Every structure is written in structure tokens, then in C-alpha cells.
Length: 197
Image 1 (cartoon, rainbow, N blue to C red):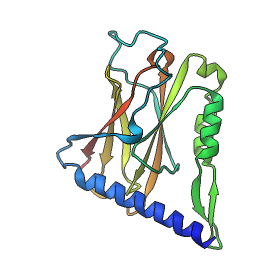
Image 2 (tube, helix red, strand yellow):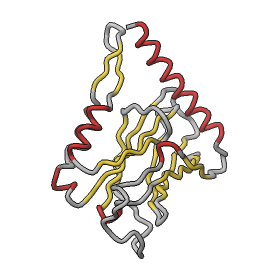
Image 3 (cartoon, rainbow, N blue to C red):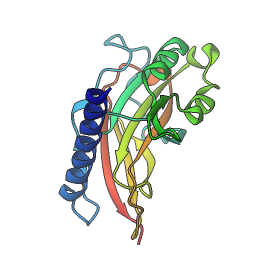
Image 4 (tube, rainbow, N blue to C red):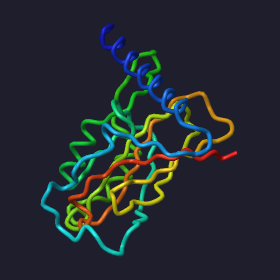
């Protein structure tokens, strides 16, 4: 039990330091930064299901912003979901940490995430897929907005930075909805800091 708490604390400390390093490394003028690591990947394999070029770019996708999931590793963490089964597996592997009344850590599924993603059934996945972008932020006041996805597969996300923020960490899942004709692309994050002063 003691080793588990130590590992958990160490991971959360590392995530906080990583997030602070990213914020410190970003210029205040809103310049973009690219995230390698978990930000890429081939969606739907090399066998594309639709025309990957065309006049329908940029895409401004529907997106949901859900607070509470925990992510470790590169930020943002991109996960492609192509079926209800994959979404259920994602839910099983992603939990949130809460604190019990007796001071013990309790891990449970994020009910907000489960409710928000309940609508994605087999009928939805017959013609669509999801990209879930996971962020861990050093302040619960930082918000996000998916601006567009361009023809190069770059997912442009604004990090909305308030002039004053809370001193709590927050994690976010951004659920991005896409038509299956966009499968087979490599998606990367382009994150831009936007000061909201």
C-alpha cells in the first residue's frame, strides 16, 4: 500500500512538473508548439476508407470537453476510438482519483465521462470515429477549444489561459467526433496558448 501511494505521488508530481515545464516553455505571445509523443498515430490503419484530399478542409469538428480523466505520458494524449468495444475498453482503463473521507485514495470511473460518451453506440461507429485528446493542466482554470483540423492532420487546439487561475491541477478529455472518411490520416496536435486577459 505504501509503495503504491509513493508511485502515485511520484507520477502526479512528474505530471505537474511536466505541465509546468510546458507552460514555462511556451511564449506569452501565443506562439504554437507541437506535441510529439502521444500526439500522432495512424488512424484506421494504412488502408484509407475515403478521399484524404479535397475542398472540405479545414474541418471544425464537434467536440465535448469533460473534466476528470488522468493521463500519463506525452500531452496531449491522443487515443483513436473506432468502435463501442474500444470505447468501453478505454473507459475500463481510465479512472479518476478521489479522496475518501478517511483520507485514503479511491479510484473510480469518471461518471461524467461515462454519461457524455454513452451516446456513441454501434450505429454511431458505423459511420464515425472519435479522437480523445487528454490533457493534464496545472490549473483547473485552464480551458481548451478545438479550433479546426487541417488537411495535414493537424488538430489545432487553443489553451485558454485566464489572467488569474486556481492552484489546483485538472485533467481534461476532449472527445472529437469525425466522419469515417477522415480515417487513415496521421493526426498531430498543434496547441496554441491564448491569454484571456
